[in-house]
Length: 410
Ligand SMILES: [Zn+2]
Ligand SMILES: [Zn+2]
Image 1: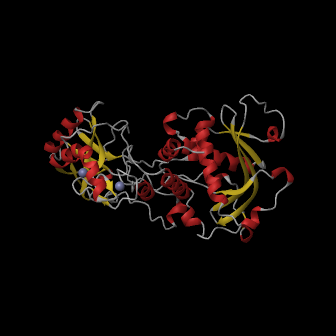
Image 2: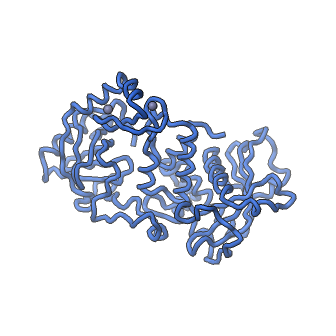
C-alpha cells in the first residue's frame, strides 16, 4: 500500500537520506523504514526483543500524558511546535510528515488527558482516515507510557460521503495528511506484531474490524541512527547486497567485480574527477570556540542532536559535549559539505549540521580566500557545496575545484 516513492518520502521526513540513484530493493527500503520508526520510538532500548506482555505492566501513574509526548531535544521541540501550530504561526519550513506525525501523537496524549478515549485522524479530503480507540495506558518505565489502542485504517469510497452519520461522528477529529497516516499505520502495524496473539483476541462487538496495537512517545532520530540508516548497502548496479566500494572514490558500492565492471563506463567520469582533483587540507575551528553570531547562521550545532534526559540514560550514549569535536561518522569516506562565507568568516557544515566548523579570515587568510572563491561560484550567493573528507578532529580535506554535478538544497 506504500509505494517506493512514498517510503523514500517518509524516510526523508525522518531525515534519512539515500542516494537518488540507489538501487535498494523495495523490500529492503520498507525494512529500513520500519527500523527508522523503531529508532524514533526507541524500541530497541525500551522493548524486550521477544515482544511485550501488556498484562505484566502496571497502569501509567506518572501524571498527564502530554509531558512524555512532548519530549524535546534541540532539533525539535514538539510541544513548542504544537503551541505555534495552534496559533497559526508554524512555518512550513519546520514541518514535514514526521513532525506532523509527532504532533498527532501529542494530540492523542492531550485528548486522553481530557478524558477522551477515541479519535479519527483524517486528511483534508476526508477519504483517507484512521480510527483510534485508546484502550488503556500502561507504564513501560517511569518515563515512558505505552498507550494500548485499537486502530483501523480506512479508505472511503467517496470523498463526499457525509461524516454526520454512524459511529465516526462521535470521534474527535485530528487532522493528519495521507503521509502522516501512512507513518501512523506502519508504526501501528509494526507494534501490533509485538503483542501476544492471546491478548489481541477479545474485542467488543463494535470493534471487530479494529486491530490491537500500541503507541509510545517518539522523537527525532539520533545522529548515529541517521548515519546508519542513510548507508546504502545495495549494489549500485543490481541492488543485491554490496560487499565492496570503489577503492578510488569510496562513493559507490558493488556486490561483485562483474557489477563494478558494468558500472565503470558511467561511473568513471565522477570517479576520475574526484581522484584527479586537488584536495586541500584545511584546519578549522569548532563552532563553540569562535561563535561569531552572524545573522541567520546557527551559532552552535554540535549539540543539535543532544537527546532528551530520558535518552541519555539509555544505551544511545551521552550527549555530544559542545567542547569536543563532533564524532566522525563518515570514516574516510567523502561527504558533501556546504560552504558559506561572510566578509570575515567561513562556515562549513554537513547535511545534518552536526559537523559545523568555522574559519576566520584573520586566522588563515590563504584558505579563507580559497573557500570564498569556491563559494562565489555557487548558484546562491556566497555559498556552495563541495566534497570533503575528515582527516582529523578539526581538519577537512576539501575538493575545492570540483563543482557538484547537481547542487543539493539544504
Ligand atoms: Zn551487483
Ligand atoms: Zn569510484
